Image (tube, rainbow, N blue to C red; front, side, top):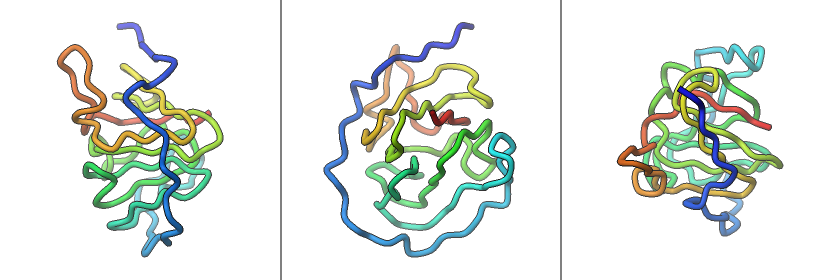
Length: 141
């Protein structure tokens, strides 16, 4: 199956700025990111804040629940986060592509700088398929 990567994500919209909320708690995930050579993503609970220079995903809609944030490409997001992303934000300088399978396999969706997808179950739908809880790997450019 050929991989399809659209150039833009019409369902996403630019963030309205966000406040200066501090991340309340952060801990390293047990899994080591193979592609990045060691840096594991941070995880904190109940925060809407995505740090500048990172891409973020939350386990629930509307940027609620535990947060996954990282800066680099991940061939696999780890057992604890595989197929759990429900909302996304990109605060990196360049685009990020989220894929449905490991190491960039399957379909991919581009999230440009400053774009937010608050409800993947409603915003990222195509041909009857929903992207909520389907992301397994990430390419950061």
